[in-house]
Length: 167
Image (cartoon, rainbow, N blue to C red; front, top):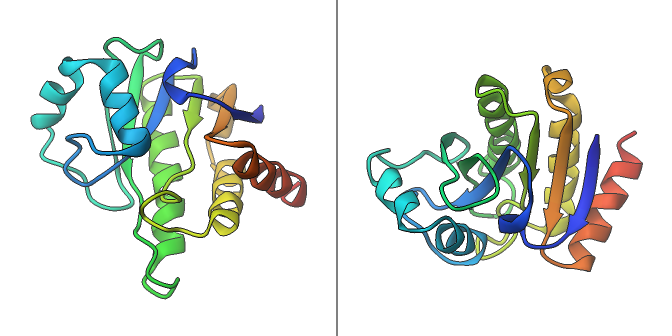
């Protein structure tokens, strides 16, 4: 049910991919920029009408030119040392994204490594939160497949380790 892959999240054939977005939802660097480029200009136009998104929350859009039907945009926390609520906010990103997937009848979802790029969240701690939150999701039975899509093998190793440790 939960699998770790290294690859390009924009190419995955799942019902929903999660975008590690900034609060404007209007595109940026990293995963966010890649998703906006792959989805086409329609995604930006749609996001302009959403009014942004708070840290720890999520909003859903069509996938437009992506293989995925939906993009779930979530805003992860910027790492400030761990005492500013970052763990709870990061867990909320995963939980809110899963809730939106279930509400929209998505049975497969792929997550990037939220907040671990320019937002500076420690990668090992982020992997632990990702795995624990997905495993603890109350309505996980409504989701058939969760892909933790990592940019590189070192990140995938951390996620695989978190899966083994969290059984």
